[in-house]
Amino acid sequence: MTALRSAGAALVRWFEQEGRSLPWRESYDPYHVWLSEIMLQQTQMSRGVEYFNRWVERFPDVQTVAAATEAEILKAWEGLGYYSRARNLHRAAGIVVERHGGRFPRSRKELLALPGVGPYTAAAIRSIAWREPDVVCDANAVRVTARLLDDAAPAGGRTLQSRVVETLEEMGSGLDPRAFSQAVMELGALICRPREPRCAACPIVSRCWARAAGTERLRPAGKAKPAILRIEAVLGVLVDPGGLWIRRCPPGGLFAGLWEFPWFERTAEETLQETLRRGFRERHGLQVEPEQGLGTVRHSFTNHRVRLEVWRLGRRGGRAEGVRPVPAEGLAAYAFQGGSRKVVEMLRRQGLLEQ
Image 1: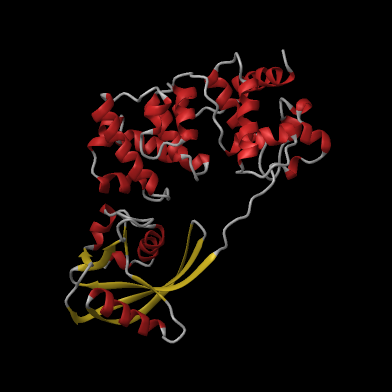
Image 2: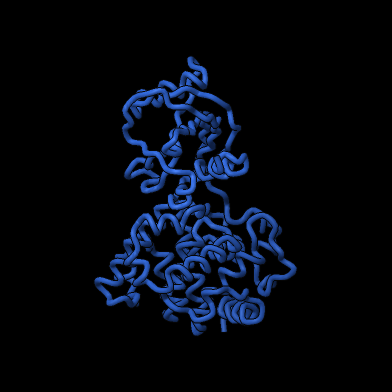
């Protein structure tokens, strides 16, 4: 047995003893495996488990996902972020029901044809749900392998990617694909962590070249991060007898299908009040008057950092375009993008939704 295959066997033994108890590991139902992989993209495990359990209670199978409206899907996903995942999940469920009789396809080609399913997710479903020998090459697997080989190639590059696939294929040869794929990901999540690897607890530390060279914290080599974009804006909570006025986020954008309170980017030439008056007049045909500053909300998404000054407004006239009033008690039925969801929480804390 080669050193790599021996390491793979040791890793599987470790996983069988130390692997976390997670809800999708109870049955390895392909629907649950698919859902967990989609949810855990850009999401911490504890939050993913919380949403997974709530989701499965609301949508127990792929048929109920396919039968739901997009609004219902987005509402159930609210707060998890990266909403294109939810829209793709909804579309993929429809395809699974219509083309595959409600059963997840087993072939790589058919899985890759589903919206939101890329090479990594397809490999995860095949190896974990179906026990097919497919290499799961997520960030954890890349980090584990780069340290195991002490590979200085940059993360995200094709050179390291090909070495990861080749190495994991040899490590997992002859082993249960379900156990091996999860063992690699589990090691990266719990032990071989990005910033503070717990090398003393690693079951394959004796075979780790980076540990031997003292370079474990340098592997894999980093890649350039996008510049942070900071946005200063003012948001208006327009209140009248009909309720609070909200608008749907632009179609095709990052938050398509979600709702928000109207907000406008600030300019140096205007006061906050002037920006609100102009924004509502030009964008929505409404004449408004700022009445009270309610506080500040900070919201982050992708590489954007948004600072929202929140004001309560009164309506003075005009014909509304692109906005609608919603009674305070009806806001819970709408899925809001992150910044406006924080505003709803602010209004609730201040007692304004009870008036």
